[in-house]
Length: 614
Image 1 (cartoon, one colour):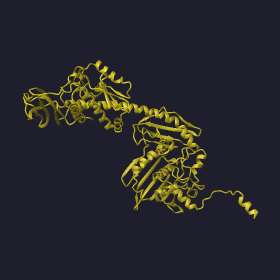
Image 2 (tube, one colour):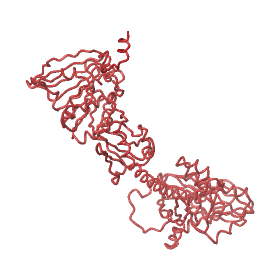
Image 3 (cartoon, one colour):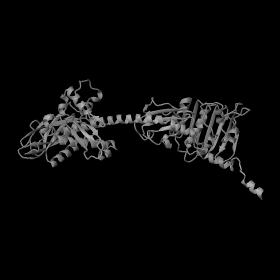
Image 4 (cartoon, one colour):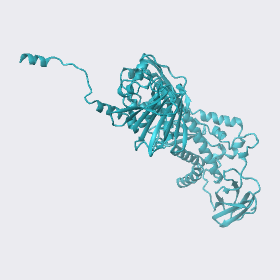
């Protein structure tokens, strides 16, 4: 009894064994969760066999959908008598020939687990591998999904096949719709560096779609970053190829091992699920040949010492990328500010064509063409001097950029600059207020379909379409309206004709016996061009914008909650800034008038400005 107890207390040691071998093979064969990854592994086998040409055929034969991969590589390794060693392939699962070749010093070979061939279970029901032997005869091995046996037989062909041919048929129901174009795009990313380094040519022939594709290594957009820190570890160097691009959710940095993609995005790893990798401004690849992969799926990384070395070595690269992305964002904000300013100023100019010039004379747009270079430079310097703003745009500079008000030397027009046939006409101003017995000049502005001014072969006819008043000169581009002796509302109309085409435009004239111009003349002695704008961050303060008369700029509080909300969308931000411009310009142009009249002016200018906002 004591001897039994003593034996029970002794340590028991042993080795792990597989209880059900076939069940283990089934688990391994079904562990690949991506059929496209399984196809890529079959293509990689051809690349490892030094193939120069690989042809992937998708089609139907005998009512069965199939995929066929043919190459001109070395073929299946041969046994001692010179025949393809199919028996070793079928009976040495998890004992990879490639791993032994790599241990002997072979380079450029993927695979180490000896299970890649079994992944055909996720593609189709049967697999046939064909390869030639030294006797110049062709042999094939047949495997069936969920069947433990294999068959090797000689295949009768007139000429021995060179390389290897792998055929999977019939395809699983979910694989039958796999198109040749999808195969092309997947392999271009998955095997990008292997294709580039080996120089292999891969063709995809989609017989069902009657199309043929060439797999070209994926090309990244953006600017290639050359000045990144070198990534070295005791286990080997890490190859980093990164591009700085415009922000987009489709931009990712993939993780590869020895030229084969492991992860589509580094952010799938917890250590890289942060800036700069999640910024959406980077694309490219990071290749770490010493990482260990999960055997079944090969789309995961084992978090061992090698992974920790990799993560630590990438930290200096991440810091450098953060600074580069911040620089790009600042530059983009400056470009966006210039674009917004240009859009707002152009919209205001277009609005002034439809508004009474004598009521909005503070906007000295028409006088802008006569401004001297010194005055423009002074305005530009003042706008750029906004020291406390995050970004600034010069009103004068933007006017020059817009190409509408700057003085330019006459030059030969390009073909596309000549106007087309008449498409529309409008009257400037489109609305006006005229005192009783007063006069107001109007102008017809004809344009073609592209919005270019039409100036040739035009005839004009002006008339009073509704209300009282007269138009003494009614047949020219410009017409003068003479108001009646009684207040009222008058609608005038112009018809522009060109080669049988007629377009009409109209304007609304309010005839009144008094004008609300209290203090409206006050700003005329200090007339300026359209202002620029700058940002001043003042979170928690209620003011949205202020006009700086000395620098002729609108200061916008980009810490205000309304600005923060508007900035989430580019078009909403543009409209918000345009409304702030409208507010400041109306306040400046109509000082001292009653609040109801001021609001009316803001609605008026906003209406015409946002109509032209682009």
